[in-house]
Each structure stands twice: as structure tokens, then as C-alpha cells.
Image (cartoon, rainbow, N blue to C red; front, side, top):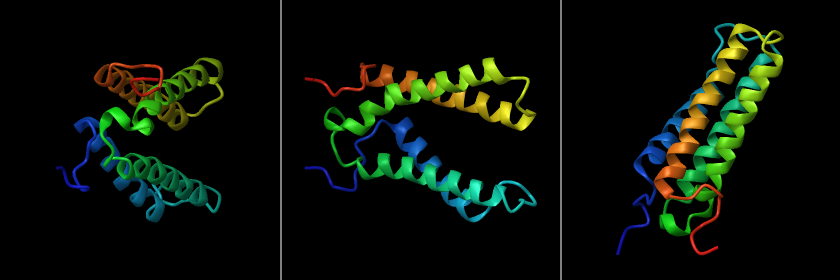
Length: 133
């Protein structure tokens, strides 16, 4: 019998969740721009809260066996969709975006695209459904 504290996640997803947890906490309390304007500070804090929400989604469902973890399976098409949306944004509005915004979109495109492809390959499913459905 396994412990409730034993994560039943693929090791790359466990690392991903821990990275998001650390990134979210850091961004929430320490904005990532050196001298944030009154407008960017709340936005940076919101990015931290969103990252924490995703990390906690993975970590709080880690006790569920992989074959029953619907959050894990549903994240495959969600991450691929986010990567596709970032790619579309880059293609359609590249000239209107600043260098930092383009860099952020490329990061989402690569990180979530490769993450979704890797997790889908690991799980053997791409449709977001757990086996048997």
C-alpha cells in the first residue's frame, strides 16, 4: 500500500509542478520587473497566483493513480491548445508585440507545446480522457 504522500505523477510532471509552485510563490511576493509600475505589480502577482493554481492542481491530485487522474489527462489537450494559441498570437500580432511579449509567447509555445506532447506520449492518450472512457 502506498502512502498518500507518494506522488503518482510522471517525474517530469512532478518537476513541472514543483517549478510552478516555486515560480508562483516567487512571482507573487517578488515581482519580476526591477521597478514595477503600479499597473504591472498586480499583473505580476496575478501571474503568481495562476501558476500556484496550476501547480496545486497537479500536486493535490498526485495521490490519485495515474490511470484515474483526470486532471493529468485533461492537461494534455489544454497545454497543446495553449501552445497553439500562443503560436497564433505570434503569427497574427508579431509586429504589435514588444520583445518581452514575443519572448513570453515563444516560451509558452515551446514549454507548453513540448510539455503537452511529452505528457501525451507518456500517457499514450491525446484526447484528455482517462482510459476506459
